[in-house]
Length: 289
Image 1 (cartoon, rainbow, N blue to C red):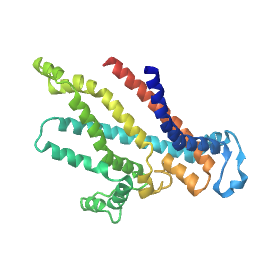
Image 2 (tube, helix red, strand yellow):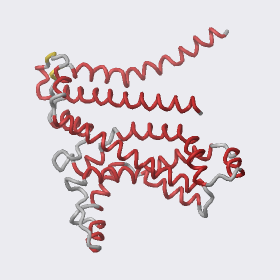
Image 3 (cartoon, rainbow, N blue to C red):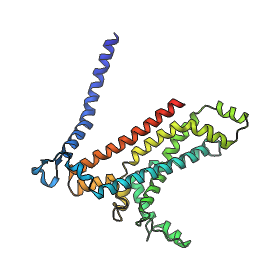
Image 4 (cartoon, rainbow, N blue to C red):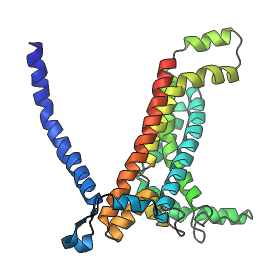
C-alpha cells in the first residue's frame, strides 16, 4: 500500500515537473545555446558557433567589469544598511510602545509600492533643479547633486534602503518575537544589563534569522533594474550601470543576445557562489545553536 501511494504521489507531481521544465528549462537551455553562438537579432541568418569565445571576451570587457563592480557595491551597500536599520527598528518595535501596530503599518508601506514607481518618485524628489529635497537643502546652504558622478550610485542605494528596509524589519521582528523568553528572564535575574543581553543573547539567538534575511534581500538586490532604468539609465557615464541594466543594453538595444546570455550566466555563477557561502554560514550557525 505504501509503495502504491508513493507511485501515486510521483504521478501527481509529474505534470508539475513538466510545467516547470517547460517554463524554466527551455529558456535556460536556449540561453545556454545562444551564449555559445554569435547570435544577433539583426543577423539571425548568420548565427555561428563560437564556443566559449564570448565568455573569454568578457574578461577583456571593461564595461562588463564596471557593471559587475557597481552591482556588488550596490548589493553589499544596500543590504548592509538595510540589515543595520532593520535590526534597530525591529528591536525598538519589539518592546511595547504606544500605537505599536500603527508604527508597524506605516513602516511596511514603502514595501508595497512598485520599484518603477519608487524610482520615478525619487527621480523628481531628488532632481537638482526641480526636486523639493534639493530646494530645502539649498535653503539651508547645502548644495548636493544627488545624481552627479560622485553620489549617483549612493543615491540608488539609499532609495533601495528606503523601500526594502521594511522587509528586513518584518523578518527580524518575526525572529525576535519567536525567541523564548526564559533566557532573557534568567539574564535579568542574574543582573545583566540591557546592552549585555543584546550583545550576548539577542544577537546570537537572532543570527540565523539575520543570515536568512540577508540571503533573501541579496538575491533580490542582484536583480536591481527599475531604479537604474527610471532614474539614471546607467549614467552619468557608467557610474550606475548595474549588470542587469548592462545585459538589457547589450541584448535589447545593441541586439547582441548571445553576449547578453553569456553575461547572464556569469552573473548566475556569482550569485550561486555567494548563496553557497551564506548557506554554509547558516548551517554552521544552526549547528552551533
